[in-house]
Amino acid sequence: MSMFDHSIRFPLAAAMLAAMGGVAGGHPTGARASGEGDETQHRCLSVGEVPGPALTSIEAALAAHESGASADAYLSFESSGETVYVGETIIQGRTAAVEVRASGEVRSVELEISERELPGQVKRMVDAETGSYPRRAYWKKLSKGEVSYVVNARSTARAKRLELDQRGRVLKSELLD
Image: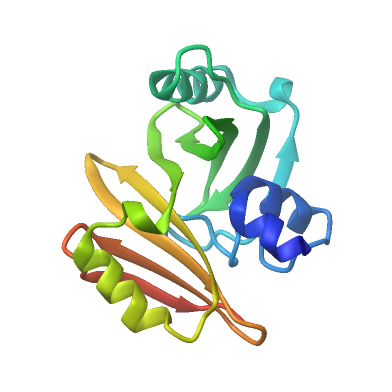
């Protein structure tokens, strides 16, 4: 498994590697999934470096998906002038990540999903937009009560990140290389 293959599966691991100089651009393809502001500088954190309200919210959000789940990794990044904290763990073999503000307000919860779990109209648009990208990772995102889908796709020469709504409409599309 190449470093990219690992990073496309584990978004925070990619960000941590990027912070250490291992993967250019952080998150699997260069940005956190929330899409709020310029988010390029990731910093790995110990649990003691995460503010109390943020830590409490991260742990509560993860435990809501699986009883007893807690974050295995933490990082922070700047977004629109504020520090955002992220906690990540593996739940039933899939990566789960929670982004929160320092106040503890949850920005988004992202759960790794398989291609089979994409709604039909989302899958059709993903195929149309990333047909030439053989490696793809899929995420279901909950932010502000809305569900969307994030797809990180990569070919040998390019990377692309899409965010789509539940109807398959493209909300955001970025070429990352």
